[in-house]
Length: 143
Image (cartoon, rainbow, N blue to C red; front, side, top):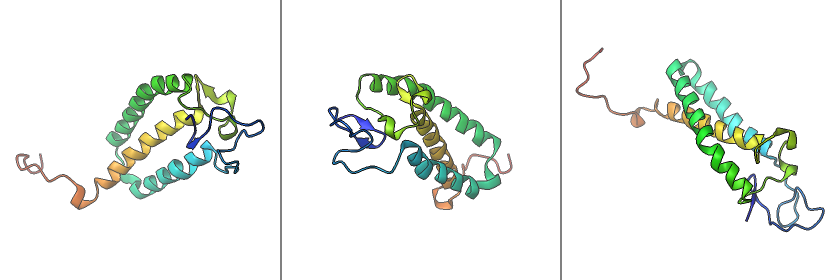
């Protein structure tokens, strides 16, 4: 069954049912709204929590993970959309001017924002004492 953002959509839809998940109930959440609620706001909260604790090497690491996510995900995600393994209903995305390949801009933003969110979560959790790795006994103090 193809998927619109997070909502399954049957291939054969009745006329006039664009923008509605199965069952006919209108869906108030767009893909952009999903990104805002579940990625942008949590990323902003993590940035506020971490504050100045983020160092240059963290930012470089986040950038590399985003690059890896983009390079790795773009080909197979486009291929899956091309083969209609999933479908993005125009009523739930920003529209054709913002499509690149077979995907809406929101899909690219999703996997980049997801990478940022995961990296920031790892940095935040590394500050929790009982989750931090134990010190290396072979490492010299102050070296």
